[in-house]
Length: 165
Image: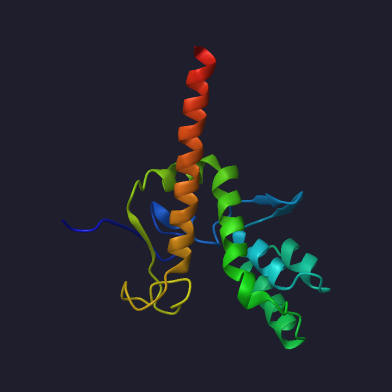
């Protein structure tokens, strides 16, 4: 039996480009709106710095990259970043798919497929480009989000059935 995969590597990939943190799906976390999961993730990375709101308001990836370089050069990264970054990604990704039905449908349609962030330049969030040498943590986060949303959907259906009785 061969394993089935849902691979993506870029925001422009069809149909899975929405899995990219760069996809323009707005999210709201703690009453603050972010243009994408990427914006949210970086705002959390540099939380409390003078550049946090500028990153959130950046209109282009070029602006975000420039602000990130500035924040890095000034040492604004949170001390606990390496310990919390996966949790930050998990929360942002969950909100993205919970709050954006078009993306949620695509994620849920993957069923039980293994989701691979096919990225040869990233062995942490991606698969290292060969499907096995990287940790593929973004793929893991997406699969965890899918499982949670599937569970919520089952619970909603179950509770809906009780109300009809």
